[in-house]
Length: 82
Image (cartoon, rainbow, N blue to C red; front, side, top):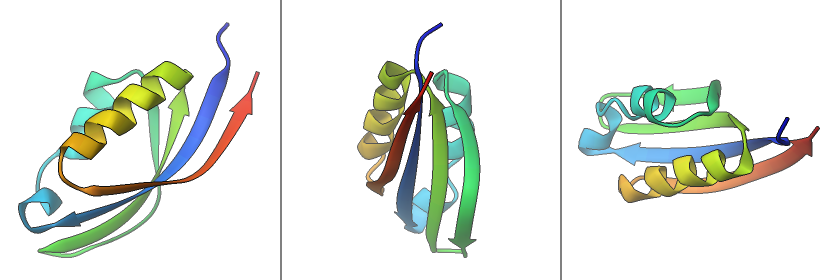
């Protein structure tokens, strides 16, 4: 079984990005487990912390895609387990 990695990312969304279903797309298009750690979202601005868990390659693909959405994405922490 491949090593599983957990990465916490902070995402800042503005304007139309707030209503775009990017969490849904993240869950559907990548083989990562997504947990919402905390969120503060209103009509035109949002900050959300997600924990992504999965194979390193899938997490890298998922975070690369998030960056293409125009949202600000920062990795917070990473842990690797067996």
